[in-house]
Length: 292
Image (cartoon, rainbow, N blue to C red; front, top):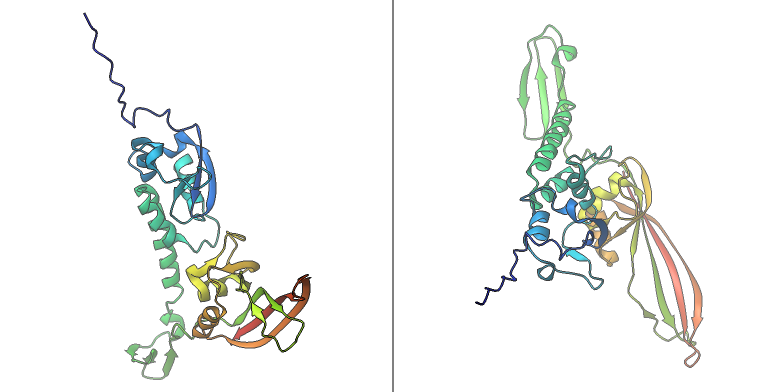
């Protein structure tokens, strides 16, 4: 009597042997290494779905075999911390709560999203409280009336005195400061000085200055991977832009109210071509912008 053959089909969620114990992830270009149980520690989350319901062949991998996730690589560290401990500790002066809240929603982590929502509400309430006026200290013992005009001016009037307060608009609240834009370039110049120079594209545009100003001007186009978690009141010279067009950087600075006050450039001959006598020059150029 022939015995029935055992089925070789196993549900992916019941067969974890396809995934190794140690898993490498490529999240937006940032590499993370973690344990397989960490990724499936929260049932129903997007990572649980990827590594418990699916199999390795169905996931996108980069050229080194890492599982690729097309999300913010900088913020993923906090998502992974939450997957490990069910809590997350954010640095002081953390300006990315809104974006991290969006990442929590994408990875289907509702408890993390609630924690971040509470933190954002507290930050907003502190900002609103700092803008309130103590009318008792301003004019004690008088009846005060308000007249809000369309020009952002608040008129406070009483029987014996009149006070006019001008509420600053967003542009008036912008802080003064310097931002320096720098880039390294190269160009080829022949022996004959009349020959047109052949310029190569700018490889990277660097940003130096106060962190809060740099983030205000360049926003999401600012690459902070070389100097993360730095308080906004500090300065940095390690940021660079995600695009390679100087004119685009100048437009953003002009829109934010900056104007150029100085520039300088240096150049050195690094290589001479043996056959054509062309010389390859490298240069470093800086543009200094200031906003009053």
